[in-house]
Amino acid sequence: MKTLVDYNLTGLSCAGFSDSEFDSFEFCVFLQPSDDKAASIASWQRMWQTARLDLAGSAAEAARQLEAQAICELEQELDRLRSQVTMLAQERQVILNSTLWRATAPLRLAARAIPGPVRRWLHERL
Image (cartoon, rainbow, N blue to C red; front, side):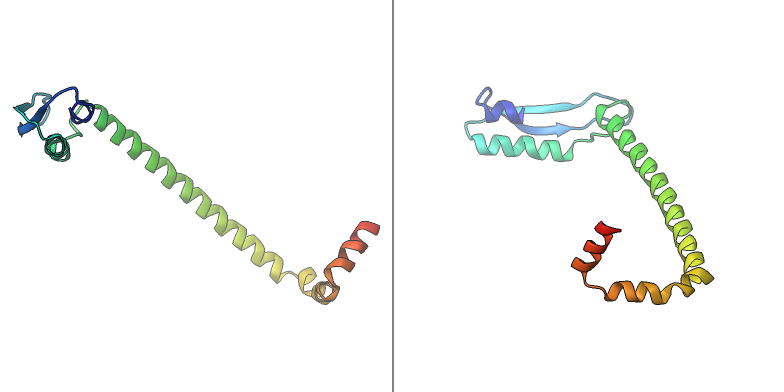
C-alpha cells in the first residue's frame, strides 16, 4: 500500500491495524481517505513496522529459517577453520623446535642480510 500511495495509485492511509494471531494469516486494516501523501506513506510505514512478519508458514519465517541454517553452517565452518589453525600452529611449533631449524638459523640470518635486488639476481641465476 505504501508503494501504491507513493505512485499516486491510491489516496488511502492506514487508520488502524489489527495483526494476525499466532498460526493465523488473518488481519484487519482500517482504511481512511487522505489527501496528504506524506502522512499516508508514514501511516503505512508505521503499520509495516508493527506487523508480525514471522508467522508460521510465511515467507519471512522461511527466510528466517534459511538464515538460521546459514548461520549454523558458517559456525561449523568457523569451528573447522579454528581446528585447522590450531593444527597448523602445532606443526609450526614442531618445526621451530626441530634441530634442523635451529642449525640453519645462521644461514637464514645471513640470507636476510643480502639486499633484495641481489637476492633476486642470485635466485634468477641459480
